[in-house]
Length: 336
Image (tube, rainbow, N blue to C red; front, side, top):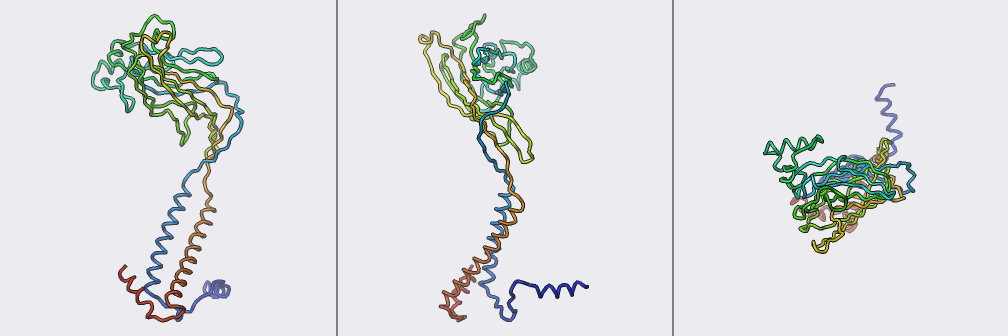
């Protein structure tokens, strides 16, 4: 059977009513309305396609059932004090204390309020040489570090999964040390470029990232009270990532030197683990759902605009088909 015969038979089963061409009247109003409707449909279709491409997250809360005994802590911050006088420790609820000064990278730097910066290291070869030594874990000239006046502390550590206190203090203040930091050198002004727990996942927001705290007093205590929430992230391909997110509140206290007896100045990150786990799942709208919405938009728009057009025409003519009554509308569309 030829294609033409199949087409003739298909006409018999056409379920859509047709209007004879002799009964169709093409008007300027109809043409303008068609253009406007086409623009509207293109706009709505673009919006649906943009929404279809977006990734959405679904959140589920449950009790933390993980058996991990350790917690990864990531930090990248700069303190306005030389590296040789700074100590970093973690003291957890079990009484265990970890001395982390050797586990983290401590790089001499100049303090900047905007981003991690090495200042003089770029232009002066002697500063560059000492920075390279510090970054590779080799001994470096402490006098140069003192001249630069700041210290960038960064890296990742593994601590017990317990309520803990990660703190940065000055030598001779808080722990026994052969060195006692001169009070004139003490300034715990700091900028946090990153502070997080576990691995990074898309759209993760760390509240302390890109934060800055400034003080002009030597004996200042910065406290950060952090609630860590275990988090499981599932992407749209089913890959699983075990990590954490957190909420934080902060405070600071300043003491005059004569009032600072027994006071340990420094930066203290006091964190605890929540018993609730958050499960985040990536979701993506199905292609079938996109088609259904597009068909609904196209069909609904055509029917609605056609109904409004007929209602307007009926109201304008008072139910009569007097062509002269359309003259104002014709003139309006000609101006447009």
